[in-house]
Image (cartoon, rainbow, N blue to C red; front, top):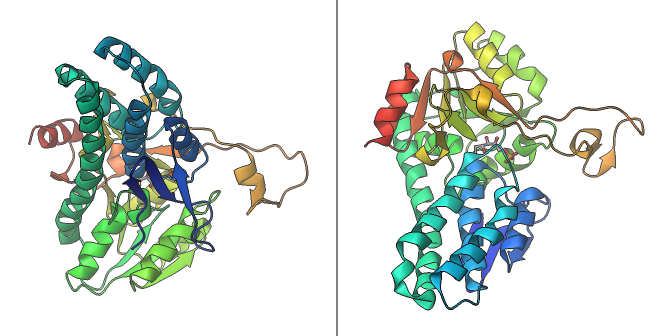
Length: 345
Ligand code: MRU
């Protein structure tokens, strides 16, 4: 499997997800601003992958600072993180990755600048490794919820490409397949940016996991005809009451799943929880360029000047969610207590 993001000497290398699956091209980021730009332009996307990339970006930023005292070093680091922290608003993993790096810098202030830079480099590598381990853990918890012979519907791409490796929702699916269960995946294409059609289908085909691509407006049809057994999706941010922000269209899938009595699972690492928020109402929803709606592959499909709206995420209220699969275990309603308990493990 191609690495989503990798920290090589002095560079952060990413597979360009705007070009997949037709081309396998890599982008090398040499500065923290390059990383911010790669996140903004969707070269790298998916909440955990954004968090890992951000941490690597902070390390690149730290490497470039010439300072003799910790105070000067830290204030320059904070300044450099500003743009990065605004690169995408909804996935909490971005702020999580940056904050963890800043905390390590503060805790290591007595080390001296060269050692401090080394420490930050190592922390970014650790965050990357931990993300893969979290996905494997989520996979083994989550696969217990998938019956042999299931057809699993997923939305967007919550796979290896959205993480440091293995994936969250697709991690659960991979783990079920690895456990010998015969499964099939229905992948929603996920307009407007087509992460399902481009990335999920590519990933699952690479792994020889049976996958069928459907357009977003077909999922109700398949649910009504008893052709979906379970839904598994990822998350960009989860509020303390279990409300989930995920790719636009997730809410619609959850409503349909409830209507048809189909279990609806969310798989996300603990780093995607934002327990400072009491509900999903407080989660900022990213509005992206209207070109993602008016164009496909940079080709306009609408009349010139068409008025469009483009919220990139929506909120699925907790009462539509059967369970939240994390790397620490599975949380069920009432989420305010179950999620908090998992963070204390
Ligand atoms: O806009 P994107 O492609 O970054 O959105 C990604 C999603 O919505 C994913 O489902 C989410 O980040 C979970 S990824 C493990």
